[in-house]
Image (cartoon, rainbow, N blue to C red; front, side, top):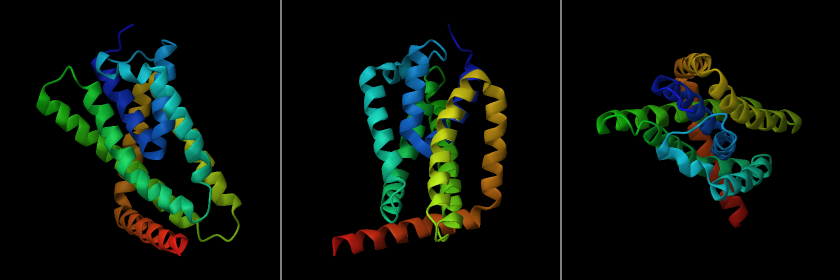
Amino acid sequence: MRVPGNEIVAILAGACFAAGLNVYATVATLGLLARADVAPLPPSLHLLESWWVIGISGVMFVIEFFADKIPAFDLIWNALQTFIRIPIAALLAYGATAQLSPAAQIAGALIGALIALAAHGGKTAARAAVTPSPEPVSNFALSAGEDVVAVGLTWFATKYPYATAGMVAVLVIAIAVMIRFVIRALRGLFRGAELAASTHAK
């Protein structure tokens, strides 16, 4: 079963946003959906169907599930994930647009990276608003919710690609409107990660 090019682009928008929230959950979900013939991937992304890729992504998802819920360490983890989520989203977009011209592929990769960056930035901003709360439940619930959204959005994108693309567009615009707060939150993430790292080093 082949997926039309325009649907692949729509699915990709959802997958890149999901990758910005939890890249391991996104990659594992795409691989499993492809293996189940729910969402056939283009040839350039068939690597995602490998049980090795699915297995490693699953293991990393479990590690992230716990790492993301440990106070202080979650700052270090999410700061490091900035350099994983966004590049992998760009690679997904680049591979999914392999049938297009090289210039279009590069543009697709850039757009995919920007969508993932918006999701990652929005996630960080939401964390910045919740983290000051003294009780741990809200932060734990937010983290678990992000995992559920990453998996759910990836699946939803394969079933309703255009609706997903529309939702992602609205979310990206909303995050762009709050860009100053998002930038402050990202800066705070790296400052907090640096402080947490130095504290643990001592």
